[in-house]
Amino acid sequence: MDKLILKGIRFHGYHGVPEAERQVGGSYEIDAILGCALKNSGSTDALADTIDYAEVVARIVEIGTQHSFQLIEALAEKIATVILEQFPVDEVRLTVKKLNPPIEQPINYFAVEIFRNA
Image: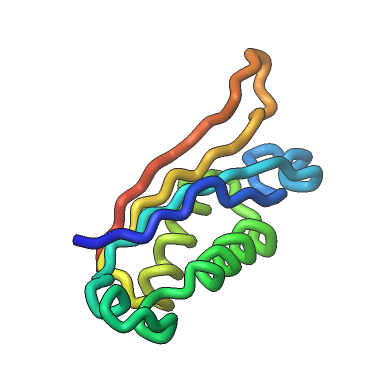
C-alpha cells in the first residue's frame, strides 16, 4: 500500500487529566502515516487525484486546538476517526506526543501510537 507521511505537526493544545493542565495547555506533536492509493496521482500529476496534505494538517491542528481531552489516547482516536471519514484513505497510523509532560521526572515526551483502518 502507498503512504503519505506527515511528520512533526505541532500545536498548543488543552489536554490532560488535571483541570489546570487543560486550562494552561501544552505542546503536542503528531506524526501521521496515511495508507492510500497514489498510483493515479503519480501518473496524472494532479492535486485533484491525491490527498491535499495541507488539508489533513489543518484538520489535525483544528482537532488538537479546538477540542479538549483528558487522555491523548482520546485525542488520537478522534483524529484517526476524522481522517478516515473525511479523506480517501484506507488506513491511518498516528503517533501523538505530549511534549515535556508535567511530571516530576523530566522526559522529552509521552506518546501513544494507534493504527486504524476503514
